[in-house]
Length: 77
Image (cartoon, rainbow, N blue to C red; front, side, top):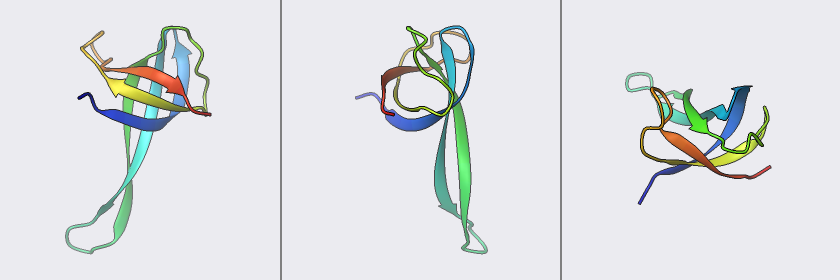
């Protein structure tokens, strides 16, 4: 089973590559306040169909380049 994530496209300036960001809430170990953390990953977009602001479903895959380890499954909105 490969990991899948839903995130928002924050950059589409490269050819066949997008930058996807997902956010999560984690609790601070000492102060117990919930903090918003974000993770950015590079994903392969074969048809260049995703634009900035789109919500996409991506899945983990074999290494495609130095930084790309994810690929786009479908565009949600």
